[in-house]
Image (cartoon, one colour):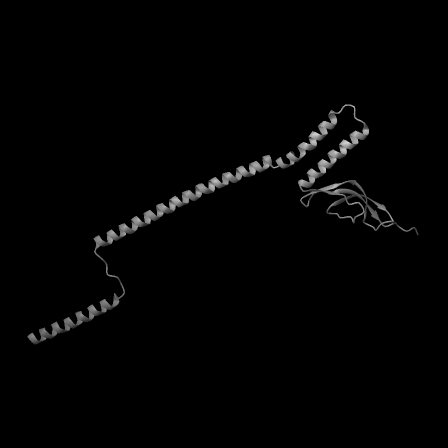
Length: 196
């Protein structure tokens, strides 16, 4: 009986050894867990780091938001000032013309010739002002009719020029920096109809 008992113990030891090996093989590559106290300390440290990072990110967000709000306000003020004072350059150029007209009207005993001369000088000042501001005159006499720049008021048969040629300008047109402000009002030629 003692031989059987010894044999049973050997078999049990062998089974325990195999079971231990199988369990060890199954847990290869896994980290062994630290004690709960050590694990808690590690988690607390990670939590503190995460909270510090979150706090830093929140501060950066608040700074960026404040900067965007300031930028938005500054841009709104710039747009408002552009609307309010956008014609300041125009006004500065127009004032000398107004002064010239005022001085011309102040003369009480002016001849027709001196009034005409004063008007020509004022007109020259006005034309220079318009040139400085990028305003161009559209005077298309004897040019081909261009529907993008001209407005045909009437058509007249004319055999001296090609059809669709501007033969009279009723009102000049104007453009501002190549953008049409007012089309020139014109009379356009058309072919003379032959009588049959």
